[in-house]
Amino acid sequence: MQDLPLKLAKSLENRKQEQAFRSLKRSSSLIDFSSNDYLGLASSEDIYNKAHEILKENELLINGATGSRLLSGNHILYDLTENYLAEFHQTEAALIFNSGYDANIGFFSSVPRRGDFIFYDELVHASIRDGIGMSHAKAYKFDHNNSAELQNKLAKIEKTDDSELYIVTESVFSMDGDMAPLEHFAKISEEFGAFLIVDEAHATGIFGEKGEGLVQELKIQDKVFARLNTFGKAPGCHGAAILGSQDLKAYLVNFSRSFIYTTALPPHSVATILAVYQEFEKGISLIQQLKNNIQFFRSQVSQNKLLANFLESKSAIQSCIIPGNEQVKYVAESLKKEGFEVKPILSPTVPKGQERLRFCLHAFNSEEEISRVLKILTKLLA
Image (cartoon, rainbow, N blue to C red; front, side):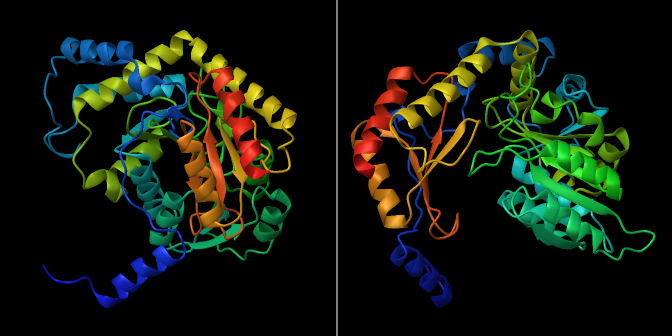
């Protein structure tokens, strides 16, 4: 076996020196304040059984898709599920991708073209940044949630007749847990004739009457060019969909390389998406239970005099700033010894000085668990 190239070995050593070295670990049996399974649906036996029924009904008791969707992998469940998603999310069409990362890569590498301009929030997910990096469009970031700066940057652009403008944001941000001013962005996109793109990864299944997402809760779905809804968070399964017009779907099928050149999801994965959304359509009490837990968590943060440590958030993501990789890792390990799994977020994932404990709240967390973990955290920070 050849040794690692010197530059790569040096990069690994630097990570270790900065207390930022990552390694793969198995999921624990500790009290969960770390996973994205906000509603607990990933372990739902009812969803598992319903997905199996859908497979039997459609005579798809097979293990794999056998090829890309443009070859042999476009089984009937794709049509059923994409049509269901489009109706549920009040849009013309939905196109399923293998993951949220694939969806963002596929969209941003193919839709904005040379001569176009992309304006993106500085805190958007790495998958969006990577997709933008593969695009031939010019890209400009704006300060987080700063609509005034976005307007100023848009006003300064000297575009040609065939230039298009794209505004990109998340509805709920994955590290801070705060929400974008989507209504303001929708007005700005109308003012400048721009296309608004919203990543709903951490809003799907949480916001809206039935978990439709923040865009539909605000009733601005007709003002958004494209939405990305992932299924690996609150829906508790796998994959993602881009929501938009029929023409956008047709374009992505023809030009999105992460869609074209990959084996399709196996039927069971697509059946699980459909099973989850059929539950959403009924209206599930877990969504309200999660919202109750979010409110209770914030009340306990205040009661323990931790408001100065926590970022403002009304979502399931609650971040406690603890500067320094070594310090935040120490607090996380101390909580683990008390039976709680809370992940430390280290630099360079977040800027230095913004290292944090990222609490992910769930419908299945009890008030006693929330109270206890915050009391222990208070002692550790003191």
